[in-house]
Image: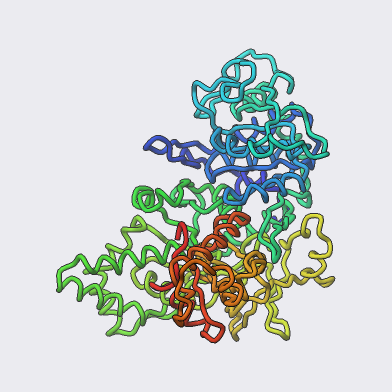
Length: 639
């Protein structure tokens, strides 16, 4: 059962598909557009067959720069069924890192969500000499090839809904040369400089995903689809997911079909009360370029659940509309909802405010692993009548499980929501482990821990307290980086996670710290502090720079200025240098803000510095951090 390919999960967990008319649902123009299980499977198959026209070889890399929606799911599974290795790229990566990834994997084909995304990266694609074809998943109804590219018009290409040709349509299958030819363009700054001495393709083919599906529809037969499926081995490389490293350069994690499918099956089969079929409703809003969300996408598909795709901008509205029974999240969402509930107290009458505060205090005593004692149970029942239903309504009122991963979740939030009937569970895993390693679940929910291992996972604690894991779904290695691979994978099959932890007598794992030179924001994003600090300390005005932000929503920087260099810099500015805190004057902080802005240009948005503080060497770091994430510190742009 563990030796499965990812496309085979569309056949259901037990080899039979659960029929669902609302298997995948996309918010579009103010309403939900639904796709049945059969319709989705057909679209995936059409994409896989249509891609054959581009002449790629099995194992070629196909990059995905896409929003997390139905289009991603179709492109993801379509490229996998075709036998390619897909490489999803985070939309918040810098252009520099996007190009680095495209160059490193030597991608001949790129799929983007829409023309807006293509317009943003178009000036830089000349730097990827292997790239031959770009497929746009969603185009307007009236899109004409070449309309925005200054090339000859070749007719209408596709429709916004991605509809394909009818089976009876007699259309010749075009050759790749019939695709729109787009000259490589330089960005404005580069256009004024001579081209670098590197080979560049003369043009890119660009077409819509609807066209690819039409070509696949022409080739479709049950035998053709089965031939594609039979050609994939479970051990074949499926995807390369790039993650933050301790340097500025991201590193690619190689995962096979059986790595991910085994993790999906182990994660879902070990969850109690999870039923197959459309009555289980999942709301997905986390980025699908991350393994956490992809594992649950595949699992919900295999179990025949109803999947609704949302995004952070519409999430609260969609929670109320969709009324999910299952939700995966990162700590930041729960923190925001908790903050909203607390802020609501200011708008209540005096009596209602006291009732709300009483209910909040009541949750602090809740232990989800034990039944409440009689008096406490009566108090919870009273809170259930007065307060708790309003909290549940934020999540839609039907939530059976909310699994939180990506970063550390405060134990008090687990108690807060679980007491109100919103079961919150904490999970733990890495991209290198194909997603989930451990999680708490019903009957085994100990706040502060990340739960018990899922089936197939062994956990050990090294002498230095680092967490070691062994499982069937450990990565194949880091892409083109054998040195880094050997550093984390032992010959005995153990993976060094880079996290510190402890195991209690019952096998529950608690993460106590981080060994690797990385930290996580509460949004689930990894930050590599060293490159940020090196950018700042390269300036003579900075004696020391310390990046902070672990378990917070953004990065901040603590800067110790080089006062001698600073005095020399501000000579003639008319500042009063006799004051003990002269370097806190607005013109000086503006100078350091400019250094921050310059450094931020070289890093993904999530790891940019949003606030900073200028401090003396003797100040306590903990006090400075408290100021930065309270009301103190200097707020930078976008903070």
